[in-house]
Image 1 (cartoon, rainbow, N blue to C red):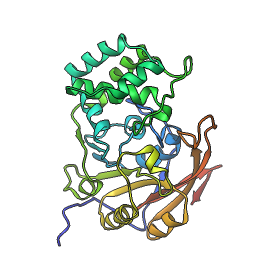
Image 2: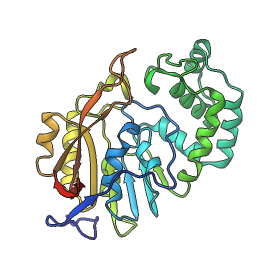
Image 3: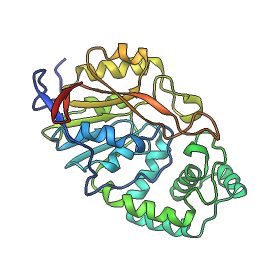
Image 4: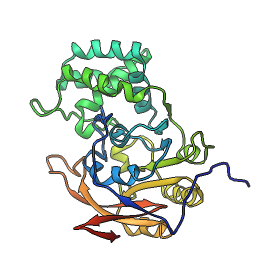
Length: 298
């Protein structure tokens, strides 16, 4: 079967030199609290993306979108996640009319345990209510988990509803003129190119993640295997973040594997401090960086 994807150059001999992390001019924070979010990992991940000149960017596992909102926006962008409720929020935030209505609602909203229960039991009758419910529960539930959400808002520590409108305003421009979908990851990876050079960033559910707690859509062993196979066959540049476990190292023994450490965006247990995790960045391109004036190969 003839491949439909293409790329300018992936050469085993070519090594890209990483530069220190620098915020892009269009940097903004994700509007979500999200389990496994990559806000604390940006300084490690963004250099792997910015080293590849690209005019098309795709993110099949968007989640909270910390990486997309932090990196420089490409000419063509495609963001995707199988969590359809989260994707509907992004679509709503990208729509000027809907976003203004949501901002007005949140300006008059409160965060309380009783209100959380009310919103949790709400049966949305339209798109606005559906988006409102998802975002309210995300901002007020433990670790932002919307799957069987539990009250997790802390007065004085959590961002109050009066600030939520700013989250929407801040991401509005970044969400303009991009493709937003809720499809299986493979469709995003194998779709034909629009730009000349395509870069994929992938942040799938981790191999040892507690998926029943954090996700409404399970990511099974077969999905991890399927992801490895489709990435092995792609001609696009890709950068993949994963937990550092033997199973992942075995699945990607054919790729370039780089070790990193960063704080998890959610603790494993309530009232537990964030853990420093052993993480992997996996690519189909080689990188090096300068340390103390010398070129360091990983």
